[in-house]
Length: 174
Image (cartoon, rainbow, N blue to C red; front, side, top):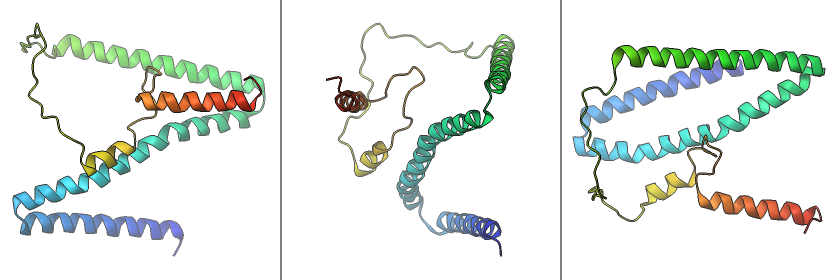
């Protein structure tokens, strides 16, 4: 059996095992046990999704970079870049137009009366220490960077400053 067929078979088997185990837990366990089990398993799913999100941006960047480098000629690169820019601008304008049409006809939030507080108000949210689950889920970031180009955590900025300093020292600038 080819490797691709084995992988497909394993995926189907594990998907069926997941469906059967979920059905068995819901059929034979108490609601509090189901809730506790779901809370514990969400740590694994959250970490898995964060790891995937962490890999996507560098993977897309490296794929595009390698693809552009393999084009070779400058004219070809310019032509492909121009076409990509036209697609990007066209899709952006289309998405803006669709959003404007939907907002114009649907009037989202029209019935809401959300008063803005005049002063700082206690939110009523409980503030507590971090649990093991919270600690582990915060070790893997949501994204490397936000869309505005700033790091999410001040500690990231410190690490980048250290790396920049080491590069300057190695280059003989300091």
